[in-house]
Each structure stands twice: as structure tokens, then as C-alpha cells.
Amino acid sequence: MRHYLFRISLCVLAIVFFALPTPAATTWRGVHVMAWGSAGGDEGLPVLKRAIDEVLVPLGVNVLIYEVGYNFAFDSHPDMRFEKMITKDAARDLTRFCKERGIRLIPQFNCLGHQSWVNGDMVFPLMTVHPEFEEVPDLPEDKRAKTLMNWCPLHPEVYLLIFDLIDEIAQTFEADAFHVGMDEILTFASPKCPRCADKNPADLMAHAVKELHGHIVGKRGLTMLMWGDRLLDKKALNMGDGWEASDKDTAAAIDMIPKDIIICDWHYSPQEAYPSIDLFVEKGFRVWPASWKNEQAGLHMVERARTDTTGQILGYLGTSWVVHAGHFAQALLGEGDPEILKDRAAPAATTLKACMEALARP
Ligand SMILES: [Zn+2]
Image 1 (cartoon, helix red, strand yellow):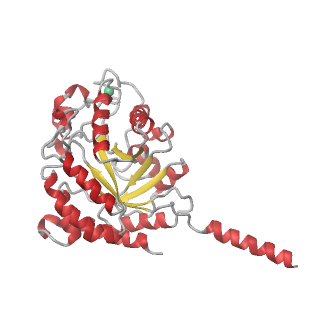
Image 2 (spheres, rainbow, N blue to C red):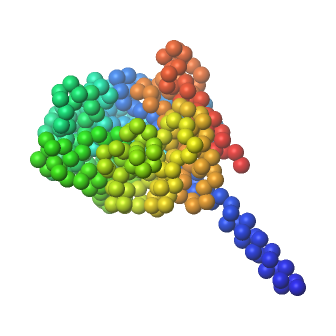
Image 3 (cartoon, helix red, strand yellow):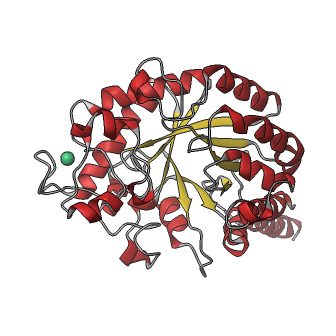
């Protein structure tokens, strides 16, 4: 009888144990900020550092995704410097500052896509210095000007230049991980491209991911992160309008790329469920759910991370999408001009605080 009861107790314990959530070993409490833009450069850093000290550290933030892009004082290719740059001294200073506070700084450089900004009002140096690298969309000129530019995934020379830029950023920020962006890429297999015409967009997407992975992970030994939207099928998942999930036939790339890439799965509007998170988990990736300025959406993702039983959902990543990192920092600190901050910075700051507090609850 005793044996029998003992066995039942063991079974109950086992059931309770396996039913409990299995959080990732260390919860990733992340913030994404942009270092680039018309008012970027070093000048936004003092207020960002104050926001880190006074707001982000108390909230338990332990990862900073720092979108550097072309706003960096490149020595390997000075012609790739854009507008107001982050100097190397400032980059090293921010790295040290974050390290001292237990924050892992992961730099980001947008690869393949986002070589220009919305409405074509900001074109980055790769496309202006090397127009031959562009995957030229098959669109009339007026529409082309408003489409985000991307490089040709099969251009034989583009990666050598990009690897130099990635190496320089990664070394300066002493990075052990690198975010390659790869979101919102709109032009694949253009009939105007002699290399890509008639190719399968998913193959092209996978090719670009593998090229980057071969360098960043294979050669440099860093962890690679990327946005997940081009790996999702908009129709199959019934998600979004072509941005947060792809309508460019790229989704099959999900089965062609290395599983050690961390997928940042971003969705900004409240939805009943985010099936993409489960899809990435099922495919064997580690997923880092990301949201922006809608509290309901962010909290939903936090809850999904908190109830994870796989250990593959890392935590929560709050984005800001404020070109001037200083403005987001002001919103976090409760400072600045409310008129300027009301559309993006303020609601993003409120959402981030709510999500980090929810993530910290036992
Ligand atoms: Zn091409």
C-alpha cells in the first residue's frame, strides 16, 4: 500500500512539474532603440543613458537592441557613413555603460531590406554609392520612389562590403550577438534583375539569410537575430496586411535556414492569438516576441512568454520606432514636449513599462 501511495505521489509530482511553464534560462527583457535618423548621432546618448539608469535598469531590462545602420563612423568604408553618426568613442562608451549595468547591447544593421525609408525620403548610402546593388522593382517611377529599397540577394559583391560593416560595428560594440533586421523586404525576383528573375522568392530570402549566417555565426561565432515577418505567410496565418507577415512568397524560407537564429516575431496590433509564435517554436527556433505601443498587444505577448512550456520563448522585446532615440528616452523619463512625443514615444514608453512589470511578476 505504501509503495502504491509513493508511486501515486511521484506521478502527481511529475505531472505538476511538467505542467509548469518552462521559462528560458534567463528571461530576455529587451528594448529596441534607433540610433540613426535625421536627429540621431551622439547627441541623443546622454538622455538615453539617463533613461537607462533611471527607468530601464529599475524595470529589469537586460538587453538593448541598438539599431545602428549607416549612422556609424565606418573606417573600412567611409563612404557608407550617413548623416549624423555614432562615433566609435561614443559606441565604446555606451557599451561599457550598458555592461556595467548588466545590459547586453546587441547592435543591429538592416540587411537586404530597408535600404531606404518610407516614401523614399531617406535613401541610405549603399543604394546611393552603389546603385548597381539594388534589386530594381518592376514598378513605374512614381511608385518605385515610394517603395522601400532592398539589395539584390544574389549580387556577388554586396556581401563582402556588408560583412566589413557588420564586423566593424560588432567589434566596436564588443558584441556577442548581432541583429540583421531583414524585415519588410518588398522586392524579390524582379523581372528587371538579371540574376533573380524567375527565381523562387523563398529561395532568395533563404540565400540571403544563409550568407549572413555563414559570416556572423559561422565565421565570427556570434549569435544571429532577425525579424521574422518574411518567414510568415500572411494568408496561411491570417495576419496583417503584408508587413508583419509576407505576401511575397518568401515564407517557405522558414524551412531552409539554420535553427540557431533567434527570431524576433513582431506584431503591433492586438489580436486574439499570435499563431506565428507557435509556428516558430514548432519549427525549432528560439522566439523573442516583440511589440510596440499597444499595451494590449504587448501584454498578450508577455503572457504567452510567461506561460511557455518549451523554453524556446525568450521573453519580451519592446520597440520604440522613434527616429530620435533621445525622444524615446525623454518619454521614458516623463520629460520632453508632449506634442512631439504623443504619437509614438509616449505610448511606446507606457507599453514598455507595463510589459516589463508584467514580465517580472512571479
Ligand atoms: Zn536580384
